[in-house]
Length: 302
Ligand SMILES: [Zn+2]
View 1 (cartoon, rainbow, N blue to C red):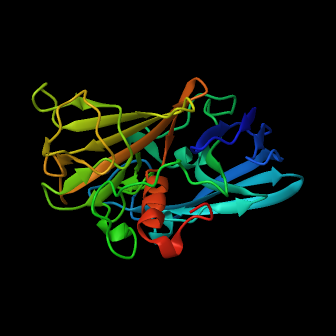
View 2 (cartoon, rainbow, N blue to C red; view 1 turned 135 degrees about the vertical axis):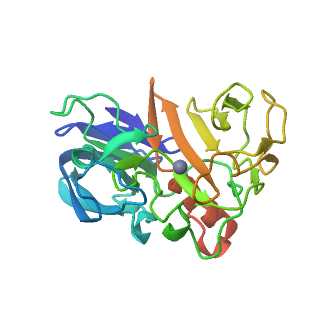
View 3 (cartoon, rainbow, N blue to C red; view 1 turned 90 degrees about the vertical axis):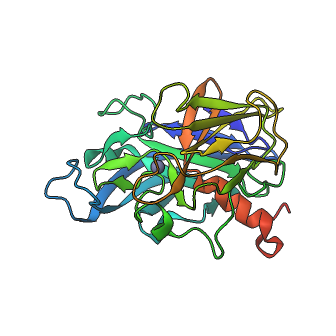
């Protein structure tokens, strides 16, 4: 598919052999072809993969090889080590976040929140790799972001993702890819709008009879992209539902409800654009929030 870099992040899912033509702000076109993907377990405490054990742990690596403007690049990630919080690659003027490959579902199930790719032509029936792209001279959105929750000093720490494993796609109980990013903090921790929010509401709540309070906020960017942000385990909302929330305003007291062995908020990020909805690692948002908070590490675009 051919797309032009917007002033917000572009999420794409690819089948092997598929090519994306990504036009930068200055008009240069970068051809990105997915050649191959793979994934391997680094270590596991499980007797049997995909069969969860209480507090079980499985760390893994995955990679994809892309041909970008004729040159091959292999991008490699780790989950759920501290390296889960990674820098994007910068290749041919494009920031590339390698979000996931479908091979991880050879040894993980998807029973702890949606996180798998959309349907594709691959053997498994799903798209084979998920990436986020941005012109490397641009931010992930035009506005500076406000911290969604208090940002831990020195960056996110994997030890503070529930029991040290529940980053995005981390193996919950060693067995199931985690469909969110957990950040441990005490019940009542203030959560604030990271960008202006156009609409927001609980899509699950104790009041409606669910076991959890799950919040969804929607930002409709002028360029047509829609960001869907979610925060689960909320103690309470502090802004009336279905009213806009200005960036930086507190909208909830976080953590607290059904937050298990360690009080935490569970964050989810989706982009709806080009007629499809694509899930992405909320870490990408936090990456930008850290940059926006600390001017010394700011984006080239400032
Ligand atoms: Zn979670």
